[in-house]
Length: 167
Image 1 (tube, rainbow, N blue to C red):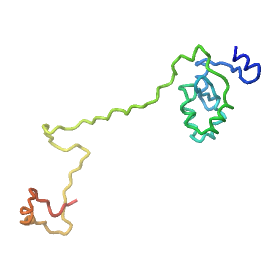
Image 2 (image 1 turned 30 degrees about the vertical axis):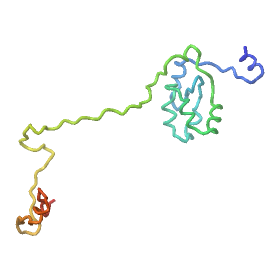
Image 3 (image 1 turned 120 degrees about the vertical axis):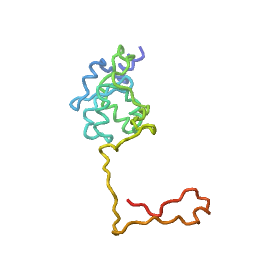
Image 4 (image 1 turned 90 degrees about the horizontal axis):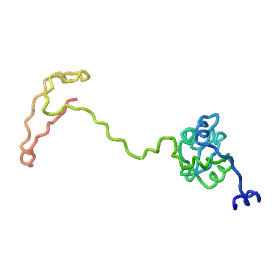
């Protein structure tokens, strides 16, 4: 009764209602409808000018999910402007139905496992993508092994590091 009085006074709008099936048909750049709460918006005119890009709108087209949270992300001016794109409401019979689109992904996917050779397995030859090469000194002379200085053992170092590493 109260809503009827508001409508008669011109303070409330008697919006047309749309089924979820009808809303789902409008998910292309030619006709793009989104849903926030129980309201249906035709955001087709926003394509090409939406700050977040067309993809942000297209992903939500056809009423695949409730965009109320997305609307709240915007500033007051943008939230006020969106009311001009409202074309109707979800019919009362469909308001309790779950949204047809996939839910937001909030979980981190499990790590990818890669097979490996365990230390117990013996490998006869390296995989085919590894090429064996031999290193030849650039100076033309054979490299000689140098003695580890006695200071290495007196420092308490248990491992001696090589003096040079060939690439």
